[in-house]
Length: 307
Image (cartoon, rainbow, N blue to C red):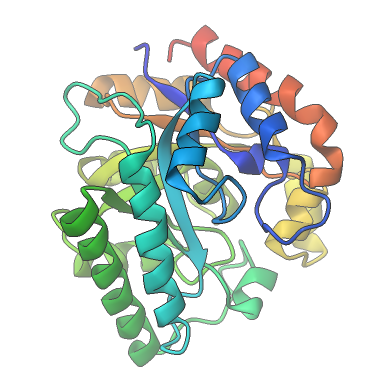
């Protein structure tokens, strides 16, 4: 298939820019390039340089481009929405001005993407992957969130030419099968695409291959992860929140976990997917010494099985 494959700063443990243990961003860029990637995600706002000129210079120094930026925040509350709007403008401005990932033939919506993820409800984060226990949003809260996502999507596309994609995420308020179905019924593809993540689908009780097939026509961008099944069973049995589970190694290099990537490859080949894939492996940044090895192994594995 020879699909374009990127990585993201979370593979070096970079999720919270306030975490005191984060590696220097130049280490992440250098290692992503050394591992064989030509593109990377922006990571949390404020980790990479926020000045577009400085950001472009750093990316070019390491022969990298930007494939996507991410809003990873509370999309439900009205009180937080002014922050979300400012974040949308800041991220999309940099995505539109920095070196962009290569366009892909046959893909209706090319990079860069704005990946939109709801996260911020502590009870949902605590009960990630636990369908029967996780509390659901009221209709009023759900509809407010949908309205916020539509507004963010319109800003990204109409003002910056950045394609918005919605990412269901373990521990967020858009996680489980019924929530993905409900979201897809309320937000048309012309407004925003989907970024489905194999690891999050598995974590939340879904078969990644089946769900990629079901929503293939809505998918503009993909995230690939793998899940260590032994660690996964253990962290769910102990009721650990999502990021504690990641710190304990629930995510592993591709090909070493529960997800059948040859089957994913067969499906995407049969359906004619030609877009970008970004590999992610959330981890504790205090274990960053394993990142270069793991992101290299994951890329080599995908190429070996025909991506």
